[in-house]
Length: 235
Image 1 (cartoon, rainbow, N blue to C red):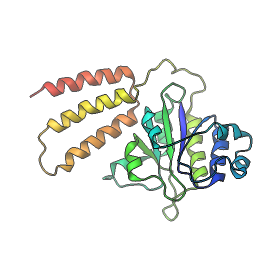
Image 2 (image 1 turned 135 degrees about the horizontal axis):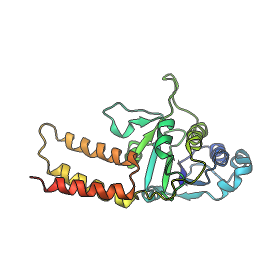
Image 3 (image 1 turned 120 degrees about the vertical axis):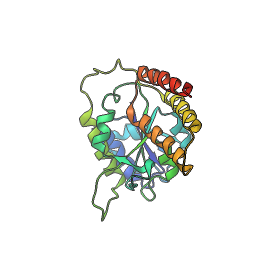
Image 4 (image 1 turned 30 degrees about the horizontal axis):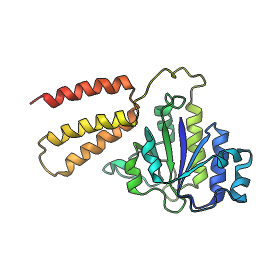
């Protein structure tokens, strides 16, 4: 299950347009963090059209909600280099291929979009498991908020299985993934690294991103626990 999360939206019309796009592609849960506009205004409702119910039922909250998702995905128009691991992105199509097996399950996923003026901060991006960016010309690479939401949701909708053939699959939740990451972090900390200490932090970031992108099942996480525990005993 995917929630669309708008972080501090500034334009009421965009919030309404996002609700309409969500209805177009079958996504119903809208979360709005610290809105900077009146999301219940006539402008917002007018843009929502027949999706006013999504806008009406939107959960208005603060950033603490981000810690409740099993998988959290950032969207950004500002792409980093290979050395900027948190902003190393997937395209919407690549992301949809990763997500397609889990969209119709109870796996709690959040798709996070930044404000029109500032996008997402580095701190918020680092909270996420991985990042999506929409390829665009370098001359003008930032899309309108609602347009960006529409493109990402379209790709997800197109990749969604029409039958619940994977509903029996149990994916690892946030606590299980974090426990595995904690074990890997202990192993990384115990390794004697040569050269800059930043190499250790880079390894931690890489493993965080790998686990976030992998959509591991509970059985796979259990198997990885066994593997890394054996590694930790090797001297």
